[in-house]
Image (tube, rainbow, N blue to C red; front, side, top):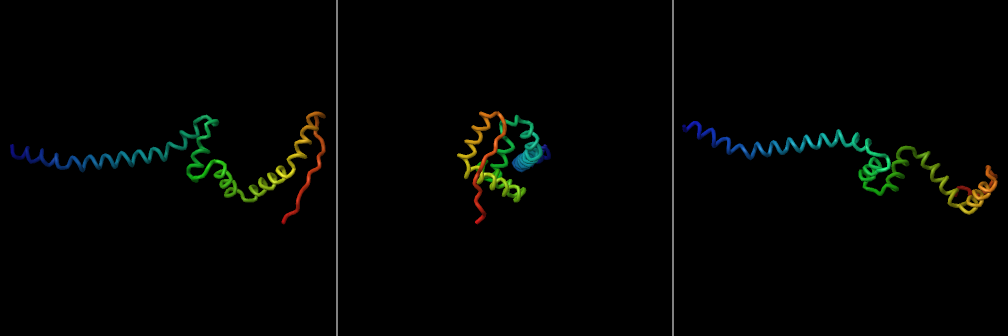
Length: 121
């Protein structure tokens, strides 16, 4: 009878340690599952939800616009430079390009347009 009582009391003493071990193991398993399954789950969602983009921006701790620029610059600095140069051309010639679009719409074909290009400083 005393042996049974001694075994029972040891079990009660080890219960908190067993609970902590189970909690730690469950937490580790949850982290592992999240790391493995997060990508496939996010990519399986509809593209209009923008979950991969949202996760990338969140990982960079930036808004999506600035995060996208940073990713493009890191991925291909030359191509990103081309995007910036094209943006500068369009911005500097916005009025001329709008007029050309209207002419092309009326003519229902491509038209020649003149724009101004500044030299590099």
